[in-house]
Amino acid sequence: MRMTTLRIIPVLLALFLVHAMGGEPRIAILGDSIPYSGQWPALVEAALRQAPAYRHAEIVSMALPSETVSGLSEPGHAGGAFPRPCLHDRLDSILSKYAPTLVIACYGMNDGMMQPFSESGFQAYQQGMERLKKRVEDAGAQFIAITPPPYMADTPEKDAARYNQVLDTYAAWLASRKKDGWKVVDMRPELGRQIREAKKRNPRFIYAGDGVHPGQEGHFMIARAIWPPLASILRVPARVRFPEGDEFRKALERHNLYKLAWLTETGHRRPGIPKGVPVSVLPCIREGVAVSEWHGFPSLHFKVAGRNATLVLPKTPAENRPWIWRQEFFGNEPQADIALLKEGFHVAYVDVQNMYGAPAAMDIMDRFYETLVRDYRLSPKTVLEGFSRGGLFSFNWAALHPGRVAAIYADAPVCDVASWPGGRGKGTGSPEDWLRLLDVYGATEQEALSGKLSPVNRLAPLANARIPVLAVVGDADNVVPLEENMAVVERKYRAMGGSIRVIHKPGAGHHPHSLPDPAPIVEFILKSVRGTGSAAAEQGTPVSGKPLSPSRKAPSAFPVRPALGNGGD
Image (cartoon, rainbow, N blue to C red; front, side, top):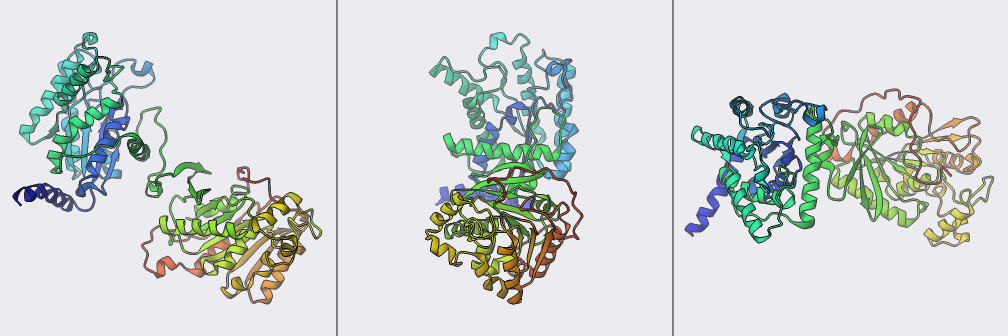
């Protein structure tokens, strides 16, 4: 019983410290190129997360290659490309923007510039560390210093400057500050022991091929040397399991994603560092999610039901997190989508290409919708955007789920499969698509021509739910003829009491889609979303972001990303 109590006490103390600091801990790891690699910091992060007090902590490395705390830089550093960056030039930004509750700093390797000991260099390092500690603590955070790792541990005979002894001096000074109340982790004795033992087992073992930067096993050694004294300082259990293999790879990927995001957010002067994703995107990133940029906005890429899916994020989400859902030809004539992103909308797409609004496509769309509403907290009411054959998906899905639809924006939409791809009217049709449509529906030609598959005969649920519809059409469209498609929908929908507006482009064919100035489209969508409200707000779901603002006039010229299909047909 007494042993159990003793084991519980450190955990309770750690939880008390977290509570005293207010909220979840926010840990910043600072240092040079060795922690920048992410390896030992990712291992320490994994160890911390095994303690209840740090399970949900924000733990981010903002280490930067070449950096010092001394502010010193040797002449001609990096071939004269740039001087060594100094942490103090960016520290205020880290402390204000990231607002850490704990800073763990490992400096020294670069501060002596791999040169023989100099008193002035040593004093610059001491002053830099003292200044760092003071600024961190003045900001209300705790500070833990870690001694630098060894230099030329594999070939000490090549250390002509006796630089490892310089680092011994730096480390001894740090350790001596414990008597002044400093919290210090000295990795050097234990790390040296591990390196010697490894070389006994395998004389070919190399800790750091270039004398500075450890290989992966060297980083594991650093983590094992750091963790027990760090755990003691933080009053968490020292016995942990470090991730290995694929688990370590995933942990490292996530750790480095956060690292680059926060380095970009807080800023630095070091050339050659990749740009990170916006920090606002980080909570959206899960396993299997890739990040890119689409017209200046962060874009997430993932799989739903085995199909490629995309979610483009606004810089600041509007109230209730509204979204527009493109069906087919994502990226074609994107001006309305871009304007809506600027208004705080998300833009969504899942690949249901060549499925023509069939039940199998509806199942995929259901799963995509559930993913976005559940995992990304998007509004339970979406705006459907059907370009060309995308109209089959928009109208058919809205007929199945009218309560989930705020509005429909249809652009030269296919509304009757007999017209396209069937080609049974004035249009050109598409024999290849017709055969694919019959196959994906599992229908005979007679069944397809009967009208039961087409949106023109499935409008009642939309009208009953009062879903507003906007269509943009070309009056001279010979691919998806107006009079066989949208004109039929318009006539029937009005007769049912539905709200519909059709914008005609005189003399225009099937292409190009949309409008050069998308303002009428954007204004319709903003008005429709305001009119429907959001179930998220009604149910008390936490929401954040800016209110929907009046539509701004979008530029008339936009770069156009190639469509995923064969063009708008």
